[in-house]
Length: 158
Image (tube, rainbow, N blue to C red):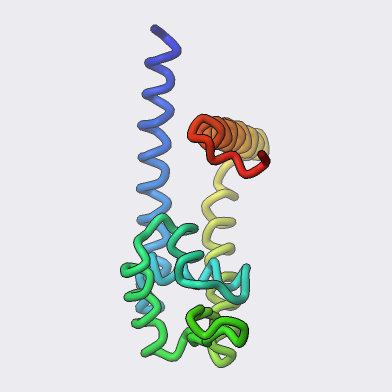
């Protein structure tokens, strides 16, 4: 019974941490006039350079129509560009506009600095515990995801 209570407490704490993290990121995004979902889209595009809307939707766990709306707003601001694939004209790729790539990189540095400022308030031992705990949680979530894929018969390794 104790393990169940601890599991519930971990879930509650994780939810609180995510809420606080989102609140901190919202404050940072306020200065840019960008929403959190827009920031998440740009974050993915900065890593992957070019993605289809369906890929963005899957990564963000949002519907294609929601992501398409986000892309529409970013495109109107000339922050992203849509390009049709040369191989398949039905496929539309999205990437960060060359004019805004530098702005996004500066924003990303500001985001990292914000997280660094928060984390430097802890001592090295606390930071190590956070790092270990998050790695363990990541492993457990990945293991659970792998089991779910196998149980659904969707194992792509077969």
